[in-house]
Length: 428
Length: 133
Image (cartoon, rainbow over all chains, first blue to last red; front, top):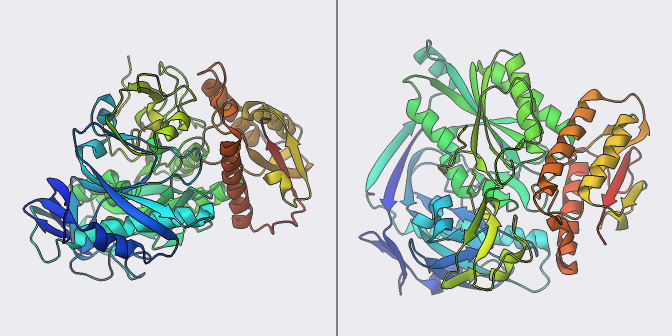
């Protein structure tokens, strides 16, 4: 498969009469986009807001962050199962709006969470603060149940992202990057002497606000499966996980999975990127065992010699992570684990809920317990009351001066366990 | 919410999640099998007031692996509880607690569905649900 990402660097988003993309500025017609989203009868009304880098703006609570993409050519369409049909994606040309994202905000449950600050110390903890953000504010119809509400906001976010990128159809972007990936048999012939590396993407699937979708299918209960890395770039994996904002994998993380990007860029040079395996994180111990055994079987069938495994969330997923590590190592496959930690405010405590002696190469993406005081912002998009009850916050989170005191676990994507941000832990 | 469902063997304990983990660890060392992970979901054990854990109906030979898992979960949770004098799980208003119940129930319901138990007719699982009042 061959996929070209045709990238447009968005300098600003503005509302306008007609939706269009011109000289780096994305103009959005609120009316047109609202009409498109209101096709979903679960939405009673929708409005939009814009947040720009450096502004004194706080967005809270956040459900998902999505990078706008739209396919210009190739089979299928972006976000298959939602915007596109369930046809195979990952080939042809896909237009990508860089420095730009859709942020869905909406209180589905009372303890909904996730902060993006566009300036100040909080802005240092994620890349979203350096992007131009469009925020659809979706009001569901009355008495919509929570599961339907979650799905409604999730799908509206994907449709908004596709709508935005569609404005660049048939245009040439500021830069192009092409990725190629052969069949496993072909790459075995082509790169016989390069180490065969497989990436295991552990995806969460445990219930309301804890699910992941592949081609529109909730992956709960699936056996581990193989997916082409280029399919992931076209939005084949969608996040329905809106608990624990600091270390959930939002849709933008899947679209830009940095482990996949790096492995593809090095493919055929110093390693052979043999594929991506999806291993689900269930709540049941037997399912965790089944997923880990099955994933390690597939790795062996592929002929993996090295393995990178990333987890989603913390606590129970560490059992999947460690089991995957142990079973692969026992089969002679070297593993590197990617995670984050909760190791106390001073960072000295044991930060993982499960460990195994075979886990001798672990990359961490920060300490979710790190404490931060966020100054008052001039404008709040969403619901500031949510800051009282977000992860790491408490009833006293909002000071009289408008500051918000939280653990960085409350900041969207701060400790992304795919390594999307730049946090790390230094040994002293 | 879990205790309102028609599960045949539900134990309800009014205690925090850390205490529930310790209670579960005792059962596991008595030979009950641990069926669901003690730290299900992404909502931290110092944040959620509710947690349901599935264990076997009957006790047999105790599993060292499950005992070790409980030990790690307790250590991890103890550390999170040390962060504050009063854990966040005890600070929620009533309306918010309902939503925690819903997420806990959704996780257990999906776990049982994936494990192919028919809701309402499990004959080999025991639910234990905890709440602050």
